Length: 227
Ligand SMILES: Nc1ncnc2c1ncn2[C@@H]1O[C@H](COP(=O)(O)OP(=O)(O)O)[C@@H](O)[C@H]1O
Ligand SMILES: Nc1ccn([C@H]2C[C@H](O)[C@@H](COP(=O)(O)OP(=O)(O)O)O2)c(=O)n1
Image 1 (spheres, rainbow, N blue to C red):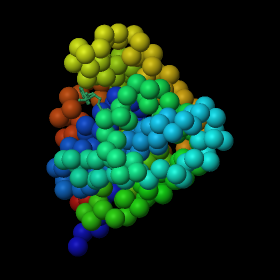
Image 2: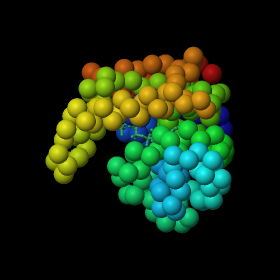
Image 3: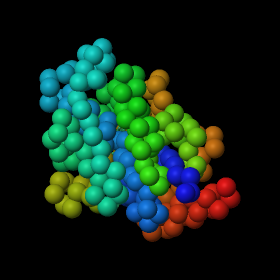
């Protein structure tokens, strides 16, 4: 049997990590894990249980309480917290605004990194794992490491495009919020958002989603053929 292929995809918000990772995993018959969804799930639990998310000691003490389970089928990824479907509630503005503070707490990261490594080890054919520190910390021996980038303008426009006119699309405000979260995620002490030395950087600003998918599939196939 072929050795499972482990693909690490990191990068800031709106660079296309989730859409690309899901499509690449589906094309190649691999599992898929959205680690950002796990940090969001932890944050949602903290907010729902009255934890002060700006109090790192309080967050650290609570970090082992919620049971977070991710389903890794790329065509239907799921996330539950204590058995409740959390896919909707983890995407609210409230969670987005609090997630960087919660994910900076080392006890939170230790707990979730353990879940992420178990998911990778359990994937029968291999897995695509997306996040901020997958290539640097979670899976440093990944077969292929990709670091996605895109201009702040392109990323903000993509995020506003998701709102379908439901909320007033203030591009400048969206961009400011993205840049602020990038700075928090890149500036924290414990495994910050960073490109691994051996990651391949792909700037998606002027590429379509299909072009990015094609590029990453080719990179994976080249690595597979070479080993
Ligand atoms: N190369 C691309 N060109 C245009 N839009 C894209 C591209 N990649 C992703 N998108 C869109 O941008 C939005 C954010 O993508 P997503 O995969 O959620 O990014 P991330 O996981 O990095 O935050 C989605 O609406 C997605 O469809
Ligand atoms: N491996 C990871 C993944 C996400 N995080 C944190 C930092 C991010 O701002 C949040 C949310 O991640 P998510 O990928 O859902 O964010 P976006 O889809 O880009 O909005 O989680 C992290 O610290 N480490």
